Length: 191
Image (cartoon, rainbow, N blue to C red):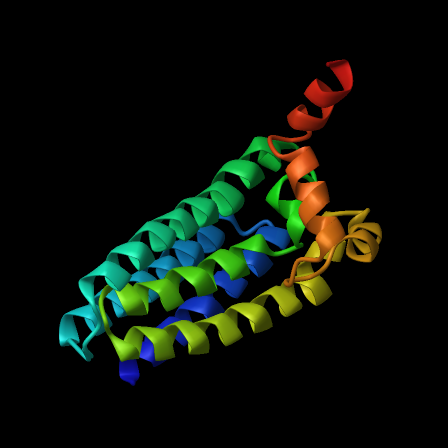
């Protein structure tokens, strides 16, 4: 359980990184972001190597592996690629997976750990994934209340049009129309 605690501290460090970003504390921002990511990743690896295994058919594990990798790629796409496209201008991202929910990384994170628990047939990864997802939700709630309104002038309007974590039918449609920053929507109109 100590390793789950390290992951919790990791999420606290990620929030500190965001707060330091608002206060223009560049070095502390990057140090906290690195520390938080390192703690969560290290705790995950340690939990996996401890081997809290159960029996699960290899076919189920392989299917889970495909979807686990997909959720990992979606997490990287949402949190790194989509955000970095607009990071230099500190522009609010409202298209693509950010039209699906305001925090798509939370969804991909949960799926990654739940599916990872099947891939490795390890119940402790499932427990860690659930606990860390709760921490992730607390983290994004704090981001919304303390950080995002200071960074993005139009964040309140975005909150009215996009669900926080759980997608709706209309947000799924909006996501599909605006994937790649709305390029799909432009191509469809021009065709």
